Amino acid sequence: MSIGLLAVLLALLVLAQGSLFRRCALKRLTYQRDFSARAVFAGDTVELVEVIRNRKLLPLPWLRVESRMSNALVFGGTQTDADEASTVSGNPGFAYHQSAFTMGAYTQVTRRHKVTAAKRGVYAARTVSLTCGDLFGTAAAQRQMDVGAELIVYPCPLDEKALQLPSSRFQGELAVRRWIASDPFVVNGIRPYQPGDQRRDVHWAATARTGSLQVKAHGHTADPNLLVVLNVQLHDSQWANLMEYEQAGIETAISYAAALCLHALHAGIRTGFAANAPIVEQGGPTVLMPRGGAGRDRELLEALARLRIIRVRAIHTFLDDFSGATGLDIVVLSAYTNRLLEERVKALRRAGNSVTVYWPGGEAGT
Image (cartoon, rainbow, N blue to C red):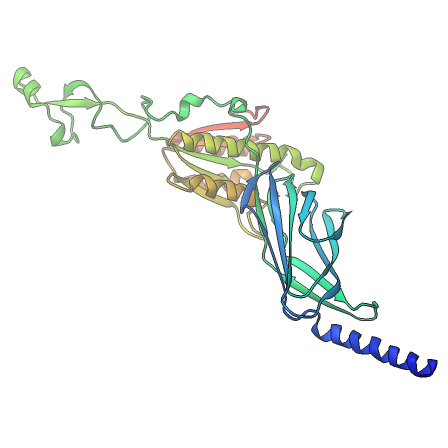
């Protein structure tokens, strides 16, 4: 056989195997990715688990897996059951993760990455690019996949010792005057009948003894409903987005709100959260009115995780939405006060609510 004919046969062989890999390399190749937990607190470590299966007779001489994720997800060590080369490169706001390895026929590779959630938010790790090629590097096939992986990172709540608001306001069975509904099980004494008193409250023995109609005087107990309202403006002229270096104070306030909500819920208090910022792109203000029950802590934490630091309403106009409320304990977390805000606070108090304006690290003014 001449050298020329051998060269032609080798060229044809290279072309044939290249064509084979282009057509078949990605067939019956599956990829799955998910986090080991749906939600974690900022600073916690979670596993990102990837499973790649080659369900065919054709081996893959090389396979490259590439993905882009937020750099708020900090990669640590990786455990794998195959030889591979991994690299992580950075770009402003994102990190690019790339792995390359070989796969035999009917094999599976599982990779477990240690990932630390450095910052509150919701992070998608959905898109992945798979590229594989032939023995000689003459042909490659590529596919992009959406695997739907998402990690919710709750704000790390501040220590309860950092909560400066008087905890006695939210302790449950507190004797206070302002609550409208009296407690039928708390009797403070006997008093003369007044128009509007219930027949069931008549104290017949005292009535017979005094000769005039007497009724039981019920005490009042606290039935608190805590509403934490966050103002994402640092000053009254600020609009829309804050610069990244300006967001640190708001992030601290979000962590404070998380701690306050969890503290109240653990004390059995119905709790809500509101903010003049959205939780979705181009959404309106966030409002979750006070409620208790199972899963309420996760609901509030997820809202705080998804909160975008973008002002959509001025805080004083946002408080107008609660003008019809009564019997609420409202904590307004605001970096500033002004005349318009103070007017709304006074109106809410006149309606029968208690209102405290506060900013973590110091009073905001009222």
